[in-house]
Image (cartoon, rainbow, N blue to C red):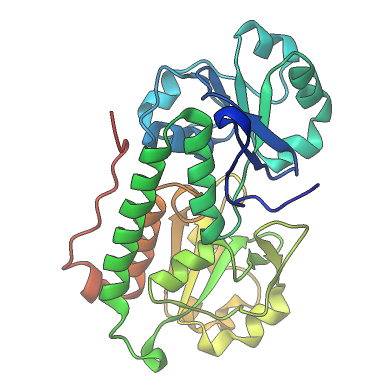
Length: 310
């Protein structure tokens, strides 16, 4: 039976633990995994944050953080299953895009006895469950709980900086996800959680997610409908959106947008505003500095540690 990722972990006989992954596959385990290949940078980053290192025997092609990740052997979902099997993994972590697009690879690994788990949270509530499930898979449940507590402390500190700003005086923001397709983020997404936590008001609250993702089609006409009320034009930059400020400024019709006319265009790294890692605190802080520099520039940023326990 297909269930939502993040349901409570349950116990079965003799200490066996189980949960359901993003693909609706029941994951049943009796002991933690110790030879892990991660095919998504957020999974990799979180494994290191849980204090793992030698257990990580392979990573994806697009790793950027922490630096230790870039010293690991590289794997891709384009590789043959034989390359994976030669490394003798007991767990391969993927995300739904891989599960849908590379079914043959996933099937071959599973037939060979390798556990393949698809994880990708879409909301902040699911992020906490995702961290718990990573902790369960790796025997780092205590560290996962510590991550959640540390993250929530950081969120509390940031909220305390903006709670005194009246709603009427909060900056209204258009948050771009993909410029070429005029797409933003769904209101429930991790990126919009970051914006709200930093004290911003999303002008595209009526955006709706596409195909079960966090990305929402919006369109130029709807953006320009809000032109006079957009105080800040914010865009993520990364593989999905290779954007530069001049491209936004010179977009036909965009000079009608208040933020564009006044030079209030800012770009933030996709890795720290859209990914479910501890560095989301960095992204929220960066957005806060953009929106309310007087409040954030004089405060101390919450600590984001690479590892909860070494």
